[in-house]
Image (cartoon, rainbow, N blue to C red; front, side):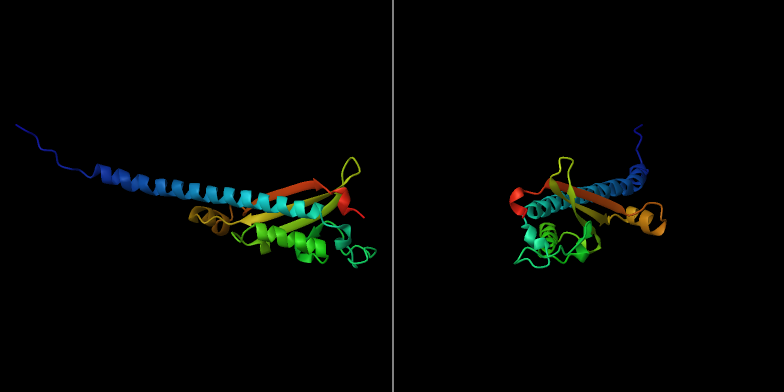
Length: 168
């Protein structure tokens, strides 16, 4: 006698149990890829802003840029929201332009700081703290509903020596 097999639906049950985990894994990979894209773009934006900052004439940081003898407009460290001098406004605009609008920089803390290095050379440091918002529902659930995790902050910074030609 030939025995006939009746489909029991076991494979459909296994698929129904595994499919949500596979989708969750794939969405997590997309979110991690997005975070890496944001980090790389922020890194480029900060580096370009710092590059622009090191070649700015010292006069552009002063109250009377044409005469170059006025007082400095800002004290450091400085947030981009409070930038007044021509040089710092250019730096902040350069950073925003190089971020290419893929995220909202208005909630980010962009800090510009002029310091002196260990070898007594002037240097500039720019830091960005960007609040990354994942699109994956599980991360959103943990961060907003359960308050288990804090928001994910991407921190990027760049330090460069100011070139002597930019000094008075």
